[in-house]
Length: 122
View 1 (cartoon, one colour):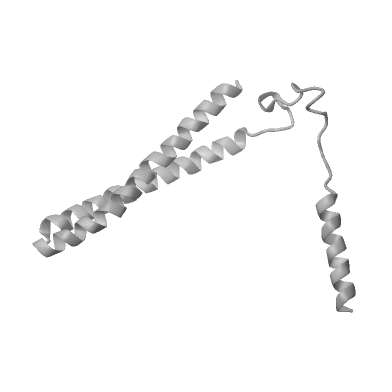
View 2 (cartoon, one colour; view 1 turned 45 degrees about the vertical axis):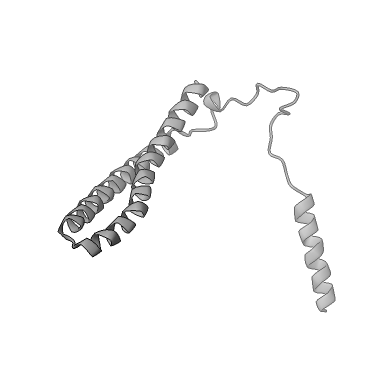
């Protein structure tokens, strides 16, 4: 029974790997200009883009707020710390600065890439 189960599972996996339906309407080799995402009437991606912009704006705002509050807290703690504690805060500053740079640059890079891609589609 175990051998039969293994054979059936193996055959089903082979069937799913080999058989894959294609939902293409035209052959891109014969007609390379058939697919134009900007003029495709069946794809309405403006709602997705609007939602993505809202999410990106919220992430930027929250990230900036958290980064500034954390920087203020670390700065105040650094100013009030003793000499031995200042060395500890310097060690924690490096990961914070790397994270803050990522929080500020990654959403801006995504926005720049989005602007480049959308300007090339038009």
